[in-house]
Length: 139
Image 1 (cartoon, rainbow, N blue to C red):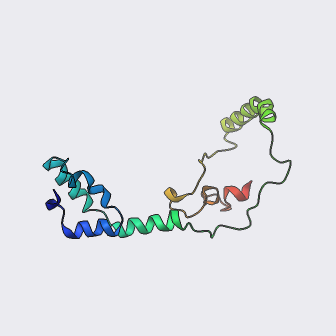
Image 2 (cartoon, rainbow, N blue to C red):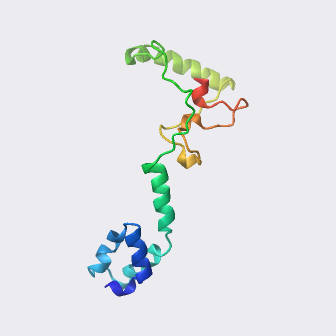
Image 3 (spheres, rainbow, N blue to C red):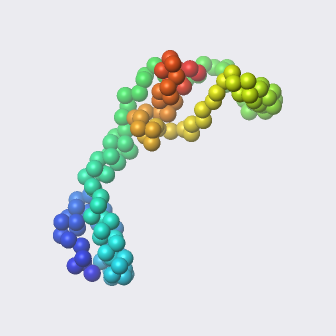
């Protein structure tokens, strides 16, 4: 059932190496409404832009990250056993400071800050502190 796919759309998919998305359509396994919905959706994508974004973020990630970041010095990190020993006291002290309004906290998962619109590690993102220091610079 290749008649519902324009030659232009098929050419775009081939150029973007995405022609496999037509497999079930080409094999006649879609109903007419499914076929129309698929073609309609496929016509909305900008394949050049999508492949460009993939290439620039996954295949060729930027490396212009602040080179002054270095690993923590020896002896600064604690063992899991040390953390377990102090965990309860730290939680109590932290909750007391939060209750007093003396501190705040931010939780970030690891990785890049692309969903924040930032091309670098989340720890380098400016979260709006008066000093504009990144989390990596603070710690």
